[in-house]
Image (cartoon, rainbow over all chains, first blue to last red; front, side, top):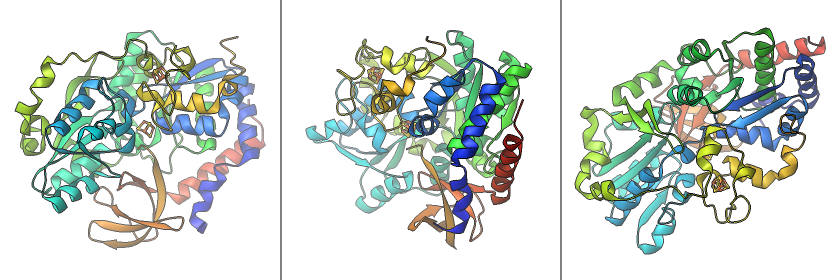
Length: 374
Length: 73
Ligand code: SF4
Ligand code: SF4
């Protein structure tokens, strides 16, 4: 490892982690805190922070922070239809594996569909350029991913390339989740990488509207622990502010260049999220100027069938509730039996960072000592 | 797919940079930021999305060490 990587490693310092945990315990706060990022969930479970935090009175639950999970069946089905009609679908690996009523996109390759798993939208565009074929990129992700999509569309994409836009904005869904009033949380850990783009300001209305503390956090174990300490302190002091723990990456104003790219290419529309009804102004739609790259416009006729399709969620799958933070994976009757990593029934079991997958992998012991379930 | 990882900019050519992730190098699109050679950047799905501030990283660690050495209340 190079010298500059050292600060990263030190963010895993065990001794300091123990001190911070003591600090959290010392505040004597009992609270449920929601994070909205798969990578935070991974840090919490991989480093065994969950039982330690529960021992301090803090329960952390996952929210709608996984783009693969919150993308609706209808959106995946649109990609499936286009694949059936001979387009090459390109997308990220997790998205390709989410099961819909007619199997996952990868499963449907067996029926002759052409799907390519890519690391970046740049690779997808490259496929279109190289093969001279119609390539549709299933564009999912929040404000972290959307600027890349925007940047590519602004830089003269190849002939035949289009996107099926499923990008979403994070702040509106946080508003929705609190507005629905079914989940009782006392604080938010906000996603560090989304925040590198949007900065601090877009979260502020949530604290004033709901009186809820928020801390933007990085992804090392110490980042998460420090963020929880900062939240617990706000709760103890009766404050509700947006604090930034991840100052090494997140500036107050965010990344202006990326925000401008998003704004040039997309406009906010109301869209549903898996497990949620329509969330106002939470979806990114391509502006008219870019309709030549909008798969929903370019293939309007081919997609018209989708309107008639009855697309219902698997009635036994509780992913929707897991994503709203009102159920834990173990509450799902399919958990670990009909639904497991080898045969995921719902999206939360698909990726190594899905809430159900993580619970499956780290076992019930990872949730022992829950102060609020005792 | 959400994984965004820090790497170090080795070389810049137009809108692209060669970024070193602890020994593995990858070509990264830098159209969303203005990094310099030697900077640490956070890379997500092929795009560098922010420059990491090493000074801030050090400050953060020092601050915590200080607070938690003294004990907290
Ligand atoms: S499952 Fe994939 S898309 Fe979802 S949060 Fe994790 S890495 Fe991101
Ligand atoms: S166990 Fe499977 S079906 Fe149940 S909520 Fe999790 S992913 Fe969905």
